[in-house]
Picture (cartoon, rainbow, N blue to C red):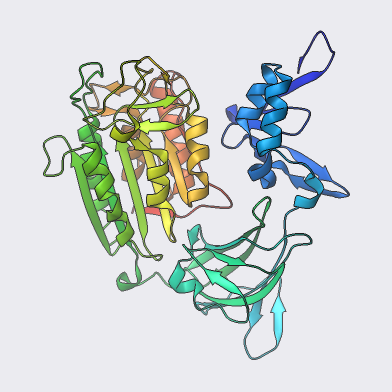
Length: 462
């Protein structure tokens, strides 16, 4: 803990967890944390215990924590008045109940037995003691249901569908939704928020069936950006980012007819028909909108990236520029907000960011703040992979002709070191983390993160 010696008041408490996760929390409950650091801390509100990550909308306030560390009580008090919490007890998360509804029999089951039927009817009840339900999201094996699926929900009045989520002016809703299970084990998860606190609950189901037919496989939509050469002489050129983007596409193309019915690709890179300028990249992010809620969309970036002093992330396109004071020209960058918009929809969504090469270019730019980057994307429904953690250099290697991060992803997709026949995103994350740390001698640590109980198949190896 860090204390103010003059007043004897505790300013913040630093807590480290296994795997490099951490949280910094002050006496008022405001915190800053690594992407998964707030999963380890519980809080009590009256007689109930919750994970503090359920209150991240309210208490994840890095700016307030920073002001508290500066011991500027005036600025700290003003920040709380403008964006803080006055009465935490009134912001408790909703309650969620999930059951399987057995059609025609009038019964529901909390623990569904294995079934040979693909059809599964989920009965959902959500209630909040204090506030209307602002957002309800439903996931099947990490795939968020899309608008067209949510439109078919039955039994609920006042539910509105918008951008693959439901909202309601009511404090209580009850409805059923029909799902088509995937062969094998299935995790169905529901999240509900009142705009201030969130609850998540899951139910398991097993569909005993043969392999999916090819025509039942989803499509993959992948947009890959690779930049070696920069117009601005202040930005060092890179060597293998174009090759990274190209090989990521080729590796996933080999999954056509295996994991995906079709792999749709867009390569934006030096020497390609679509060059990696800011305008071209932004205009083509809509390519991912072609993915339906049954499909998978993947966004890949390889190049330079920076963060500003506020932690905002900017991917630098080939025509990136800076002001006289060295600050980045945001109009000539791809912001994390642009990425969020492209990925915030139904279906399985992924983003790979191999863009932590730089240590800043002066002015108010610094090396990539990976924690803030992940936090800015985590509500978008994307599974997020980044090449390194804060203040680390993402290495390129001549012997591989790739960045180490992308090289390890490619090895995972090819089945290297894998005994299983299927590669999931969580398995890929552990493989990549181990290999990158080994190759770099522990100087580079990739991270991967998603909200909730998310894991899904990424590739069929054998």
